[in-house]
Image (cartoon, rainbow, N blue to C red):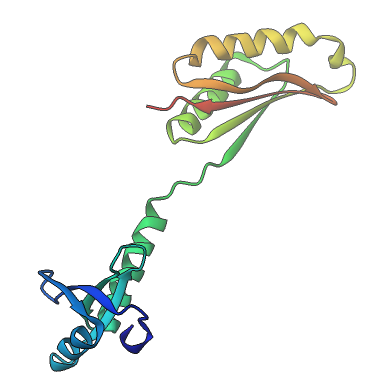
Length: 164
């Protein structure tokens, strides 16, 4: 900004957004001072560097506003977990499917855990049937991020929503 600019020539844009042209640095600074504004270097990678004549406070405010808007638009992927027992009832299974569907439609990844207790661990085929049924009912909404695997007393599968 102002005297901090090191280039001998700069491409100048005035406060209305109109391109003035390439001017010597001293002349560009003089032009900004006459209008009681600042000379702000916008792009230093261009040859010659691009500078804009504008109030620095206003420029900083606009840049902060743009950054906030970009942060607001960024979506953070959240991993939701749904825990199911192998001996789950029909209605409870449908409720879990509805929750998984909602999470996927909101754009979240879902960790489906089938929790075994005690000797239930011997009935792995129940977990496989549950996962197959879930995959069949929701196949159009997700892709498998990590295939089913055994983690201690749990069978775990991570699914991610389909990109549209």
